[in-house]
Amino acid sequence: MYGFEALTFNIHGGYLEAIVRGYRSGLLTAADYNNLCQCETLDDIKMHLSATEYGSYLQNEPSPLHTTTIVEKCTLKLVDEYKHMLCQATEPLSTFLEYITYGYMIDNAVLIVTGTLHERDVQELLEKCHPLGMFDSIATLAVAQNMRELYRLVLVDTPLAPYFSECITSEDLDDMNIEIMRNTLYKAYLEDFYNFCQKLGGATAEIMPDLLAFEADRRAVNITINSIGTELTRDERRKLYSNFGLLYPYGHEELAVCEDIDQVRSAMEKYPPYQSIFAKLSYGESQMLDKAFYEEEVKRLCLSFEQQFHYAVFFAYMRLKEQEIRNLMWISECVAQNQKSRIHDSVVFIF
Image (cartoon, rainbow, N blue to C red; front, side, top):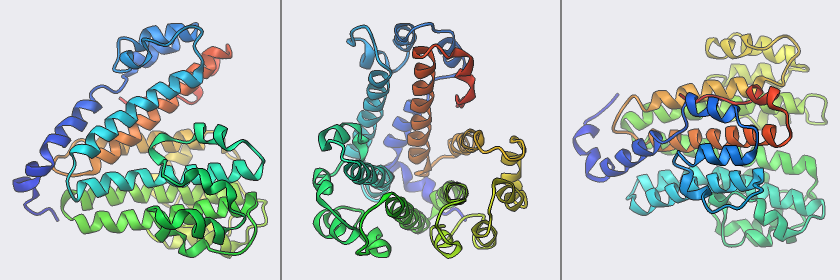
C-alpha cells in the first residue's frame, strides 16, 4: 500500500505536480466545445480558441486557415509544455516522462517504414511525424529492407532498442509485417513501462498500472478486431497481447479464437468494466467502439487527478491533451467539409 511518499514527494516533485495541475485547468470545458460546435468556418474556431490557452499559438496564423494548421499549433503547445516539465524534472520523474514519448517513437518509426514501402517522399513523411517521437536517426529508417537491418542500422541507438528482441527477423518488410512489428514493440513497451511503475512504489504503483492495464486491454481488443479475416493465426494473435491487464490470461485465450465482432463482445462482457463499454454498441457494430473506449479512458484519467503525490497525473495530462487535439481535429474537419451534423459522432467531452 502507500508508504510515506507524502513526506518527501514535494522535495523534487511538488513544483511539477503543481505545474501539471495548472495545465490541466486550461483544458477545454464542455462550454468551450459547445461554442466550437456552433462555428461556421475555421476562422470562427480560431476566434473561439483565442480566448483559451491556445490563443497565443494561433494568433499570427493568416486566413484561410487549414485543419492541419490548427492541429499543428495545438500539438506545438503540448510539446512546449512537455519540454518545460522534462527540463525541470529529476530522477525518477525524468525517466517516467521519457517513457511517455516511446509510444510516439514507435508510431513515427512505423509511419516512416510504411511510407517508404509505398514510395512516399521521406521529407513529407518526417513532417507528419509527431514531434515528441523524434530521434536523431529517424530519417535513415527509409534505407532498411527488413527488420534486422531496421534494428542494426537505425534503432540500436534509440530507447526502442530493447523492445526489438522479439521482432528481429530477416523477412522483407510488408504491410502485414509492419503491423506485427508495431504491435510487438507496443507490447514490449507497455510491459516495460508497467514494470517501471511497479518499481516506483507508492501511489504511482497503485494508479499507473491500472491506466496501463486499460491501454493493454484496449490494444488486445483492437488487435483481435483488426486481425479477423486476415492471415494472422491464433497463436500469432495471442503473442501480440500484453502479459498483464484485466483480460490476462483467460480473456486473451478467448480473444485469440474470436472470429467476428459478436464473439469479441461475448468474451468482453464477462468483465464488468468492459461490459458497460460494449453495452453502448449494437450487435455487429464496431465503428463506435473507439469512441466508447476513449470515453472510458478519459473518465479514468480524470480520476487520477483526485489523488496527490504520484506521477500518474503527468501521464493522464498528456493523454487528455491528446484527446483534446483529436476533438479539435474532428470538429475542424467537420466544419471545413460542411458536415456539422456529424460533429458529435467523435467528440469526447473531458469535463
